[in-house]
Length: 427
Ligand code: HSE
Image 1 (tube, rainbow, N blue to C red):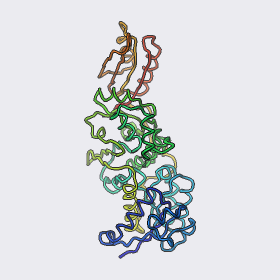
Image 2: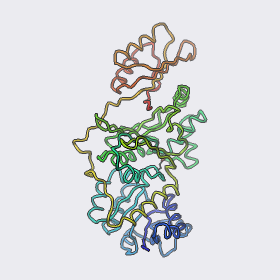
Image 3: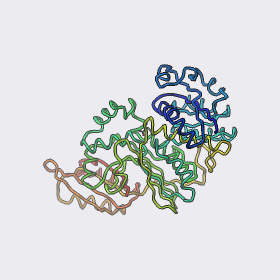
Image 4: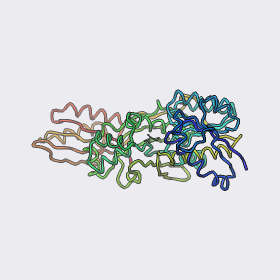
């Protein structure tokens, strides 16, 4: 039986979950994987926390140098988060001949090229299943399950915090700020929620996933990003009345015009399975030219789900020692010059505005849309307070530039009180 020594850098939520799986299932991994995996070392400043999880005092290291110089450690698990220290520790582990498993999406999205180059040079592994969509094996699916396919579409809900917030806003008819506060109290959202609610977290994940799906480097700078902070309970209520849920989608498409990559709040028809992915759950749709559509669904965060992804990488690295996977595309920090990116996105749009309830206003508006080549497929008018109507429009597939041009023009009309929202619709 092969003996495998593991070190865990950071025993926070995910590190604790990883330690628990590795120790609780030690005998199970012996019998199912023929691997005898031992946590040889942990690096955790809070010694009490490590002891409370059952880590023997002798395994608690006091420095990264102590961890990487330990000859019994084969694989280093990085779960400390952040970029500066994590990058330094990962590079030290690699240069000491250790394979690395990380859950750090920001680190992988920003520095994968550097870390992979170092890993290749040392002939060690670099694995990051846990960096995207928590316990859902999306990376292994892309690398090991979808090789027969040219993938044309990858889209899904890859951030649990924003999905929890949007679900609660929809279920309770509550305001964004109130739900955010509740989510922070419950520990779903961080005290500083920016990375999640402004879409950065989804952007890091989309950079990693789309690069692997399309075998081309897609950097975070190539991705259009919008968060959910501008979504109101009214948007959600009107979307629902029109047959849609609002979700923060990460979307990557590879078509004849080039690669389109964006993270934005999107109206999804209630009949689409993504509309039923609620709370902190994640789901990703993939379309391949051979397999057609597949969908993966599960918990995108949490101690044991993310620990599950990390341990699967530990096992994979142990079993593939000396024959590690590296991304097949030229792994640089920029996209290749030959890669074309679509920036004028085509999509259906949901537009909500408030108008003065006077003769001719509708025809004035529709003529702007028709002049810009935009076909309206849904028009609904609701009476508001005296003399004001709320107008909901859904367009056929239109370019963003023609939508923007129309909205700019419409905003100049005296009859238009306000344009409340312009959101993309994905079928
Ligand atoms: N903040 C992330 C989320 C955690 O809400 O999905 C998992 O990456």
